[in-house]
Length: 92
Image (cartoon, rainbow, N blue to C red; front, side, top):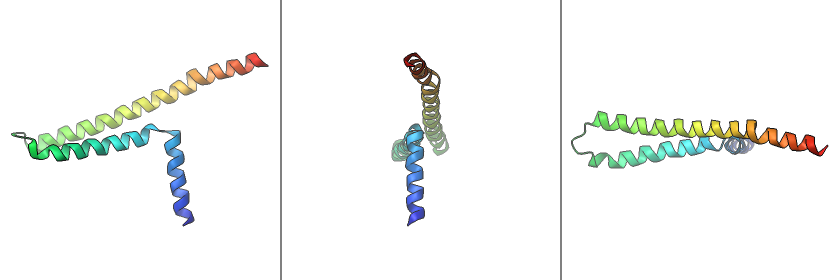
């Protein structure tokens, strides 16, 4: 049981450090699920084209979530942190 608790806490710790990773994974599965449900209503579209569109949409969401996560971490590291450092130096 201890390895299970360690793995669970590791996942939760990583999710807190990078909150956009679980968002990207959830969005990926949501898009794939939605597109699979829409498969019966695809009309005259070939199956391969429908699957390609599904893959591109899901990958685009994941890349977008990763980009937002990187921009957020850069904001915290290069904008918020220097302001806090300047305040700490000014208070001394």
